[in-house]
Length: 439
Ligand code: ASP
Image (cartoon, rainbow, N blue to C red):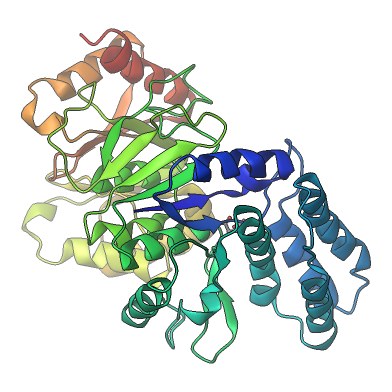
């Protein structure tokens, strides 16, 4: 049995809906369908979810929201007409939304209607039962997912349905109101349904044919990743590669259910498989490369640092007291470097520096900015000789000066710090040496 989730761009208009219909009908095992709200139809278009948030804000501020509401309605009407659905109308739902905006505007409720209405259309179009996640996805008192209650409720409710559409992105709060996940949260709904129903696979359909080895905005036509483990994916998405909501892996991971990322516009592509662990070698030594610019390194020096117990804790305390999380912490004998995000750090910079002086009494503190970090990730690296050597010789040939190196103890990744201006060149050099030349 397969659980299939479709993202906003896969459902942006009637034409996309038809592709989705074909995909679902092509395989009777695709029994539970999770739709997002209609996304962008073309670059520069607005997602329905954004329109809903805007409408709610206008309603809450007592402004005229009728134009926004009309725009939202027309997005759905366009789909209904394009699909030529007979005896189907969302008029009652539109009326209910209008009443809520008048009487008791609420952002989560408003945002959730994108998925809710799209789910109703999808159910009618496919001839599947519509099941409202409000009845079976529950949040706890702190606003987190109430995992046990949810899993039990979903399993029980869906046991009665062979084929169903369940809108993504929302559920029921502790006090019985509609509550939305964070943005992109339909991925989580799909994962919950797949986990609760013990699906064989969770298919996540989007507008790319899976994960790529590197960011296509920087590397031209990068190779596709065929199989990636959950842990590799965490490393890559942390460094900026994003296709799937971060929290979407947990409900399926526990049960060893693989996620298959697929492209609605190219259903013939195999996509990327995300799995717990695999004996399959990746095509290359590395699985992927990702990176981000704009980090700062705070270099702290103190003679005999190595023998001073508690020095590291005091330094980190200075960051914690100022609410700054640190990314990496490479260290030497008498030096230690704390790498932080520039935008988070810059306004508190002097406060942090004085706190380090006060707490840890170092000899000197230096700050370097414009640092970019690159993560080279691959489960295959630990059993291969010379991976680091190849990375650094490629960078040297490309005239990139390496400012920092950090190899995680998991040996799943190597993090390299370079200057912002060398970022693209460095990514290209690493990509070329592992993927193009495969030396
Ligand atoms: N429609 C919601 C958003 O735009 C949720 C989702 O698409 O997953 O964030």
